[in-house]
Image (cartoon, rainbow, N blue to C red; front, side):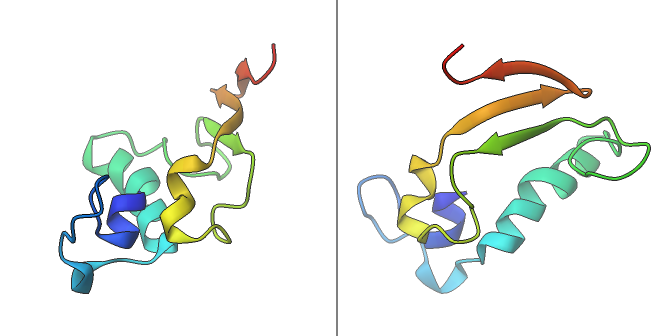
Length: 89
């Protein structure tokens, strides 16, 4: 997502900065739209009847500078509503 938002490669190479997207669009594309295009309409969304797979992050992704998105880490991961990962455990 960092590359989509900043349009810079890991080494700082400009990959088309004029084509950068906002973090909100990146999150939608990586979650809901990514799941839908892959044939999984009940993944990538939080709503009644969906599968309740989600991650809790250590920071608010919507307030992190684009260049720091790659430093955001998961605190916990849930799949189908069940805790499958918790940092420190």
